Length: 148
Ligand code: ADP
Ligand code: MG
Image (spheres, protein in one colour):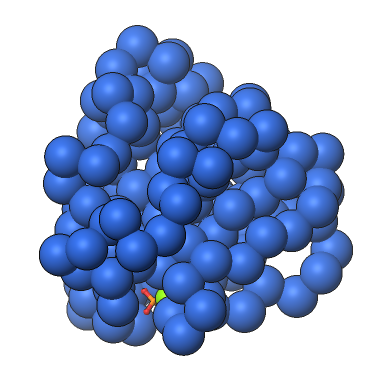
């Protein structure tokens, strides 16, 4: 799916955020600057969070309170050692987990998650998605329906 500008990416994130339920896990992949954090700003908005979202690159995780808690992780710096954080607290907690560079977690990922991959495309971005598991499949279908 082609995304022309930052506003559209935030808007799509907001629509997805509005659909999220407790226990949902989103894995965001893509190079530095691809838009993972920008997309998370939209998700936060959709969860009713009005705090400013800052990249968790150095802190690994930031938590926000909205309609549901949002656990925003950036695991780039823990690659190879998922045991260095209490991942289960975020994956199986009260809220939803959005994990930048989540693909690095490999076997530590849960059975059900939505994989979203952003890449640079001309001036805009491209977004690829696939669902791992039935809950994510349902979420993806609802989201695509809302985007149309
Ligand atoms: P990441 O978290 O993937 O490293 P960020 O969201 O922090 O990426 O940064 C994306 C950068 O790219 C921002 O500075 C944003 O303004 C810029 N940008 C330019 N065009 C777009 C677009 N179409 N979608 C998203 N971000 C864009
Ligand atoms: Mg980021």
